[in-house]
Length: 362
Image (cartoon, rainbow, N blue to C red; front, side, top):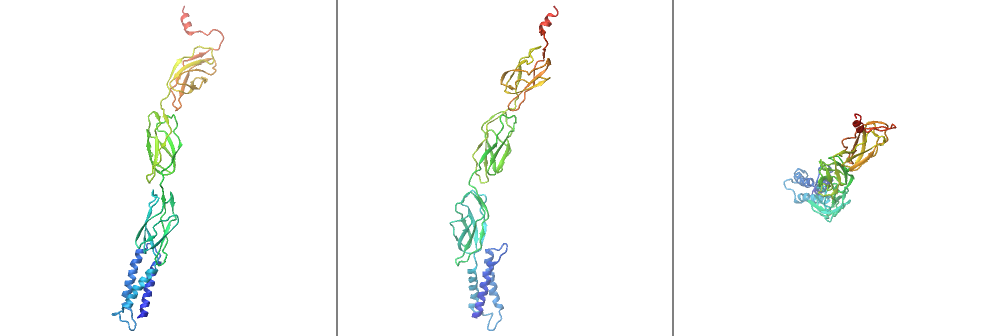
């Protein structure tokens, strides 16, 4: 009986201990608990199948039945704690002391590895929620833990699922400012962000672009009216709700109106002057362009107001010229037709046409 009792105890103990050595996907501490019970029950039931001299299956000694429990308990003590992740750290997280939950098959002492640690060092044979000590912003991919039982048996090492701690708002800076003045009603602007997020607009500007990437972001503002825009701002909110400081868009002017020109003083005609003068008015400053039949350019800059110009050196002949002014926003005026004039460089009297018309019939 004693030999049989010892044998049963060793078999039960060995089988129970071996459960912790099973390595297969999905195998957990829950399986060990259930299978330990199965081993105990199966061993007890198997006693009735023993055939040996002096053994009465209908009157099994208590020391033999008790050896099953003793063996099971002994095997359980030899089992290492099995730990399994239950709730990973949310990622990204704005909490620099995040919580983590795991399950342990046995009570014991928790040991931490990698860049994570915790004041929680005691595990129970159940679900355990621990709080990591304060972490800096960054990604944590090497954190792990294991549990050592009260009998000194070390359990498996559990790798904590990688997570990122982010407690700071995005940082924005301008990349390409709005051209000013501009004749584009939907002007472009570019800025950089060090985080992805949702773009919000402030002031008098808006845009259909609402998603920011980490890097350079190019946007076009929604259609704007003519005027000066000095209060436009951009903010980016990351996935954790951190809002950047507002980025002020440079002040810019939208101008889609071309200059208006009018003649002030016509070119004298006919004239012996090969660089004749002409005067016109413009309601905007800009660049003068010349058109027409071989009119040589003169001055190229117009002011807002009256402008006196002299054409470039002209040969004798008749001239039909035009002048255009393009403002700094790129808006070109309608061509102003200069009065037709004649340059006559021959010697002798240059007739005044009005005088001739009056006197030729006298």
